[in-house]
Each structure stands twice: as C-alpha cells, then as structure tokens.
Image (cartoon, rainbow, N blue to C red; front, side, top):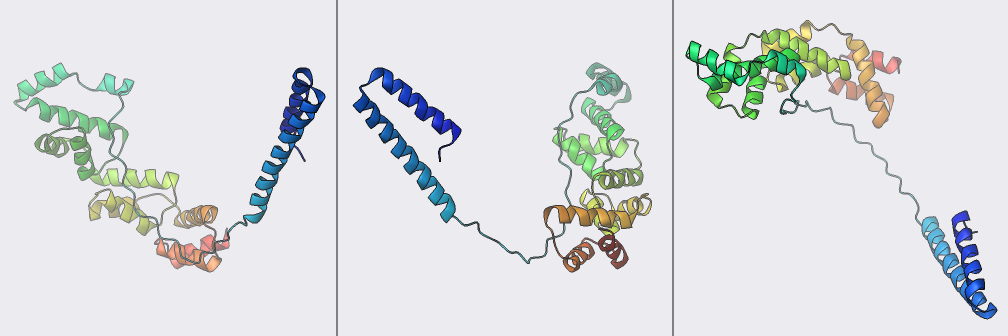
Length: 240
C-alpha cells in the first residue's frame, strides 16, 4: 500500500508523462516507477519485520551516586557586581594606602563577591580564585582575609543540595567533604540542616525508580548503600 506522499508523487508522474510522452512510453515509465517503489517498500518492510528488538535483562545493583563537585567557572558580570565591587582605580588607591599589593586587594574583593551570592569552603574559594588567574599568594591572601563563617557556609551548601536532590545525612556529609569543607564544618552542616531525612529517602527512591526501576528489596539495598538508615529506607519503600 502506498503512503499519501508516494501516491501523490505517482499521480504527478502520470500527469507529467501524459503531457510529454506517448501512451506506450507513459505506461513504461509508470510501471518502472511503481515496481521500484514497491520493491523499496517491500525491502524496508522486510528489513523491519526481520529485525527483532533485543531484550536486555540487567540484575546489577545500581551504584551509589558519586559526590559531584560544582564546576569552577568564570563569573558573569552583573548589575549587582558592578554596583558593589570597587573599580580597579579604587582598589589600586586602597592598596597604596594600606601598603597591600593591588592583586592581593583584588583577590580579597573577588572572594567577598563570590561569598555574596554562593557558599564556598575556604579551599573551594581558593580554587575559584586560582581559576580566576590570581597568583597562589594573592588567592591565599583573599581567603585568609575575607569575612566568612566557614561552618555557616557548609550549612548553606548543604541546604542548596537538598533543595534539588534527595540526600541521606551520610551522603550529604560526604558531599560536603568532597566540596573541601573540613570534617568539623561538614558535620556542622548536616547536624544543623532543617530537613526530613525520611522524605529525602522517599525522594531518592522515586529518583531511582524513574530511571532504573528495581524490586523493593533491590531498592531497599540501594537506599542503605546511599547512607540512609534501615528505618528511613523502609519508610521510603512503604510510601512509594
């Protein structure tokens, strides 16, 4: 059976042939085109019919999500940044007055700007300043002299993570360590975070089931592997 598009093409070919050719030639052209189209269609149908879909059965247990470090990227210029940051001339003047090299003062200013809109660990902020092409000494001066509560930053980072994905308390602690917070700062972050760990377990379970469905027993084991407690994992399974 011809598709509407193919039928229209054949009808057009017949009309054109009737105008330009003799009846005998028209018949020959039409027959040739028709046979070719049918052959191609038949070949396609046969190929489609003979290609049976493969069924792959996987019994492997999904791996726990690895901690992911936020990418270090160059800041975009914004109105807020333009209005709050000192100009290069002002930085140079301030540096001259204080006897501090201009690049050191600039690093300190940039470090302060970063902390205005995002939480960083001290090491993470240092890495960001290095990415901004400050020298190691200038970057170190920036993080050593910026006004920051690193434990509060750990809490802020923890909150950012649970806003977009489910984490167990242990998994979130590991993530903060990966973000280069100290053990004490990471512990402060997870201990003071206002979150429902049972709800987080349920959220994680739903995330797994959405892209890799598994049995209840398999999902329970996966949640335990993610750092949830047995009670939290059981809660998630019971409320899916």
